[in-house]
Image (tube, rainbow, N blue to C red):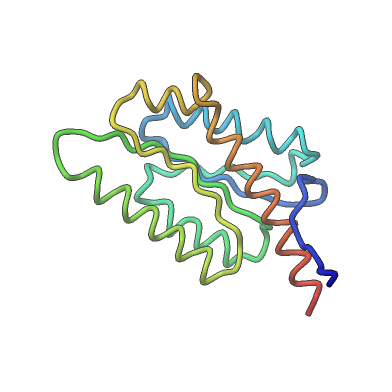
Length: 159
C-alpha cells in the first residue's frame, strides 16, 4: 500500500529567521552565532532575511522569542545560549525555565523554535559544543530551523 512522505528540506532561500543570542557566556554564544549564520548562508538565506537579537541571557529568551513569533515575520527562531553549572542550583532554574518557555513558544505560536542553549558542567564542554570536538550546536540548530520552517510551510499548504 503506497504512502506519502512529508519532510522538510534544507533550503533557506526566501525564508526569514530570527536568532536570539544570550550575551551571558558570550565567548560561547558568539561561536554558536557564527555557526548558525554559516548554516543559514550555506543553505541560501539572504542577510536581509536574518535578524539577530541579543538578550542578557537564556532566562530572557522565552519572552523575546514569543514577541518575535507573534510578529508573524519569521519562519523560524533560533535560540543560542550557554548555561554552565556552578555551585548553586541557579543553573537548574535558568536552564529548565528557558527550555520550558521556548517549548511553549513553539507550541503556542506554531513557529519553529530551534534550541541551542548549551547546558554543560564546564566551560570546556561548552567550547567543545560551540565549534570544537562536538561540532557547532548553533550550526545544528539553524539546520533544524530551516528544515522545520520548510516542513511547516508544506503542512500549512495542505489545508
